[in-house]
Every structure is written in structure tokens, then in C-alpha cells.
Image (tube, rainbow, N blue to C red):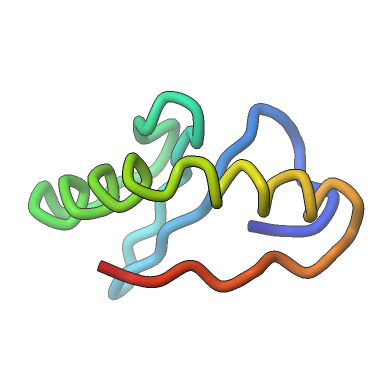
Length: 72
């Protein structure tokens, strides 16, 4: 996530040259691409941590540092 970023609530996932943008509320990829296996992992992680992601989104809108979220 980036401070003061644009709507809708989203996060960015990067992996070995792949880049993607994910909806926090829908848990879907909005843009970019990831290998299918990794996309499934990101989707599962986003679903499990949706509340924390939304909390971090709100922090970023206030130009505050997001809190770390545990990886899978």
C-alpha cells in the first residue's frame, strides 16, 4: 500500500518481475498479472487478512504507516 493512494481500497503484490493490484473488499486482481499458483496464494492471504488490510488502507489514507501483516 502507498500513502494517500487512490480508491478503491487495494494493495500491490510484486513477485519476480510480476506486478499486480488487488481489491481488498473483493479479493480479486484488478490489474497486472501473477503466475496462477501465486495468484491463488495472494487471494487466500487477502481473504484471511481482509480486516487488517482495510485497517491499513485507512491508515494510509491518513498518511500513516501501515502495520505489518503476517505472510502465509
